Length: 405
Image (cartoon, rainbow, N blue to C red; front, side, top):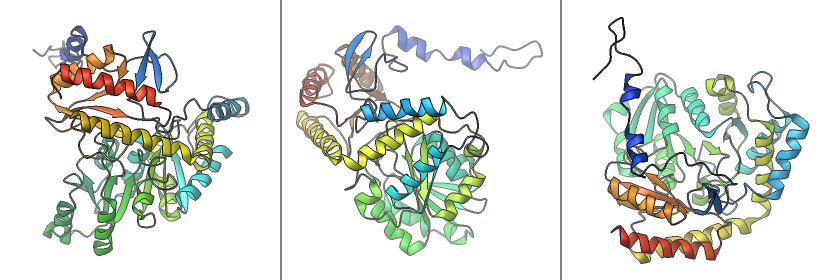
C-alpha cells in the first residue's frame, strides 16, 4: 500500500521501500551484482579473499595491468595532479586531451576526434546534439542503453528496426511516413552488440546509405581494438571506414581506462564540441585516464600479437561451448553468451559457477528480451590455455548439473 504524507500526498520514497527484490535475492544467495573485486582487472581476480577466474571483463587486450599503461598513469599524476577540476569547455582541457584526440583521429582515419568523460556520455552528447526536431533516428532494437537514452534526449523522432534485420530497415526507409519526413536521417548500429556478441550488419547498412542518403553513427565500443586488420573495429573489418560517418568508441574496454570519443568529419565534430551538454557541463577526463589510453594505443599499434592471442582464445571457447551443446547464439566476437532463457536457471547457473571460482555476468530482462536470459562470458588476450581449460571443465560439469546441457 502507498503511504501518504501529512499533506495527503504519496511519499516519493514509498516505491523505494516497496523494492525488495534485491534483498530476496541476497537471502537466497542469488544476488550477482556489485561484487567487490579486491585486485586488478586481470584474467584472475580476488573476491572475498578468494582467487577466481574472470570471464566477465571487457578488458579484451588485457592492458589494465600492463607496466607501460600503469607507468604512463603515474607520470601523468606527477605532472598534472589527480584531476582537471572543470569541463573541457572551460578550464578542463589539457595538452594531453588534445594529443589523444589527434592520435585517435589519425588512428581511426577520420578528420577529427572529440573526447568525452565516459562512453555513456559520448552517446548521450553526440546523438542528442546531432539530431534536430525534424530529423529521424533509425535505431537497432538491441542497441545499448546509452544509445536509447541519447535518442530519448534528441528532439527528433526515433523509430526502432528489428535487430540486424536489413529488410525491416529498408521497409521503414521506403515507408510513406519516411517519404513525408522533411528532416535528415541518422541510422545507429553497434559494431559488436555487447550482450549477444554478434556484429552489426554494417556492410548492408552502407549499401542502403548509398540509396537513401542517410548518415551512420557506429557505436564500436566493443569492436575497436578487437576487429579489423589493425584493430580499428567493425568499419575496418567490413571495409567501410569512409562510409561510417561518426564512429563512437570507449576507453573502458580495449583501452584499459575510462572515457569515450567520437571521430568523424571535422564540421560534425566541431558542432558536437560546441553544443553537446554532456561535454560542456561535465568535468573532463582526469590526466591519469588520458595517459593510460595513449599508452594503450601505442601497444595496440605496436603489438598485433595481442589481438591474435585474443582471437585464438575466442575461437577456442566458441568451439568448446558449441561442442558441449551450449547455445551461444550468433556471436562473432570475444563476447560469448550462454543463452539459457529461464531466469531462475540462469541465476542458479551463475551461483554454481561463482561458488566454483568462475566469475561471469548474468544478464536478464530488460537488458535482454524476455525468455532470453543468458550468462555473458567474454575473453581476454591474457587468458592462458590452462585457465580456459579449467573454465571448460567447470562449465561442462555445472551445465549438466543444472540441466542447461
